[in-house]
Amino acid sequence: MKRKQIFLNAASASGQILASAGVMFFLYRFLIRAVGVEQLGIWSLVLATTSLVTLANQGISASIVKFVAKYAAREKAEEVSLLLQTAVISTGLALALISVGLYPAARYILKIVLPHTSLAETYAILPVALVSLWVTIIVGVLQAGLVGHEMIALCNYLELSGAVAYLFLALLLVPSRGLLGLAYAQTIAAAALMVATWVFLRRRIPSLPILPRRWNRALFREMAGYGFQFQLITASQAMREPVTKALLAKFGGLAVTGLYELAARAVVTLREIIVQANQVLVPTVSGLQERDPDSVPAVYRESYRLIFFLAIPAFAFLVVASPFISQLWIGRYEPLFVRFVALLAAGWLVNVLSNPAYVVDLGTGALRWVLAGCMAMAILNATLGFFAGSHWGGTAVVAASAASLACGYSIVLVSYHLANRAPFGQLLPEESREILFASLLAAAVCLPYFWSYPAHSKISLRVAAGMAAALAAIMAIPMWVHPMRKRLLHWVLSSVQP
Image (cartoon, rainbow, N blue to C red; front, top):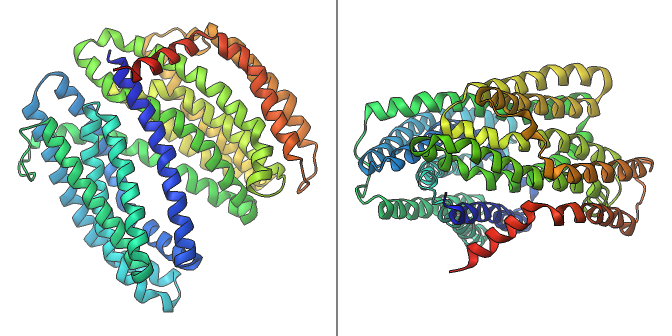
């Protein structure tokens, strides 16, 4: 296995998330000052209205990653070229038709929700936003081709370069053209990223033409069969947040919904840093499924051990540090924020621990139980959330959301072990039990102390930071002596050596 390449892909994935978040922070800070919060709200609403198109991309992109890796492992470069051309032509035509149909519907929706004085500017940027979205989705299809060849580090560098270009163009165009300039900036940056990605793909696959021109029905049907299942998985996942927020607004109010948004953003950001690094194994597993299927269980086992080593202390630290985050971010101690972080951390921890099984299922094409778990999560989230919220309020909605998340992804995890006859003892690695005990102990000691404080009270930053430091100290010894720490250090050192 190309361990150095996998490590570089994982490191670049996590780094790209952090760097892109920083770029977007500066972009939105500039936009608030340049055009104001109301104009930014119009832009956000236009993007939300047109984003219905994006779901059409998820299934085909996932198919490309799997089947490019499959045919690359078989050294069939011509099939890879034909596959990518088929995907680009199919996606481009389908999205163009959807966009044409969506345009009048989007105008109608925007006319209902926006004041009359804002409609002229909104209608001006709507077609540009649709073109930008079309280009962005094509970029996603092309980048899936790079991912299928395990060129994930290059893909991450291109993605970050596109974000920086977007920021630069926005700084250049927004002061003179307003929101229309922002729409142009997004479109130009996406188009440049599309061209750059195609150039790198042609270097990797010399048989690719300058422009896609060949379409293959058999390859399209192969991609569509896999992509349809993944599309259902994506739709089930996408339903969770809107349903949760709608129930929170109904049973908890807008203030509670706002605190949930902050808590969810903190937890999901940590989740993305860990999970995106693990997602790089999808093309690796797909390739191994063709060349050496007997090694796939070992990939799962090592991936799970690494995720367990990283996720348990990371989520425990976030939970214990949440009062400090509340004081620093919100300006005061919010018990609901701390409770929401704890509840969501529990649910998302199960999601993260199931990710190695999820990745292997994606790589091998065994999507039945992944789909079952995600649909169960969506159904439970809506039904339990409504029942709990109507009886016990907003906090119960969040608890139901976390419980449905944990239940759905437990199905993914358990079904993998049953289907592959993997011992359930692997779910609690023997070498990581001390880390688990230390994390639970720290959370059990620290959280009751903070929950005893009344709402809106001031907690000393020194006290909150001290609690977080105490957790780090408690976990330092078991993490230091853990064998995975030495292996990670070895991977880091070997990756920077020539």
